Image (cartoon, rainbow, N blue to C red; front, side, top):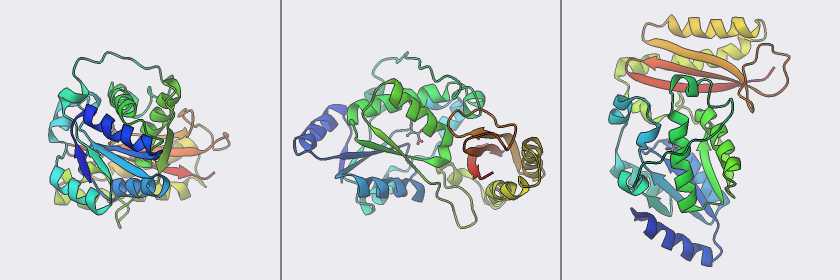
Length: 281
Ligand code: PAF
């Protein structure tokens, strides 16, 4: 695997690949890689000639400075995992390389950045859009791969891609879970032993909610999820919303058209986790 730090060097490499008509799959990450990330590399390798991953802990998408400071950074482990997964190129730019000057761009995402993560993490999706647009312009991938755990992020990136006319296919890949159901996330490694024992309740509650929904209306189902999570002294639900999977507008009746996704954010001590499930009603 080639490890590249400079945009200019990566561009030279990409031009060479393009001269040989190679297709490029791209997996942008912030590192602290787990099986979820590796599943994205595997999908990219199946679909493309060359797979490029990036690791960059993007400061502009952290609305909480402490969250940015404690975000896990374990580059040596990440490199090993990517080499085992047979990733072809790893791009690890510095902050100076990605933000040589202040980037003041604003994006209009309509409703989809006003709700859920957008509401509780102001500025977060603007930061995601800033970095993803820069990375897409450098890497010029044919396909880019994102995990569905970050359901709203995938919607934002699809919107951004249309807005900016990037000729890239956005591929969203299923959530990978631990054996006890916990959605894999880089932040899981920040949980202490006790917290780790309590967090499987998040996915267990979401899965149970799908059955509960057969008997309860939307409001009752939402209240049941929040109450079940908050009954655990280690967990505090920030929100649980059931939304249309395209418009991200709240559902208030099961008979509403479109696919429905239940999205949750939960505080566990200092750590904030998100998860989601689809409702088939
Ligand atoms: O999902 C992530 O890891 C990040 O939000 C992303 C897409 C790499 C942008 O920094």
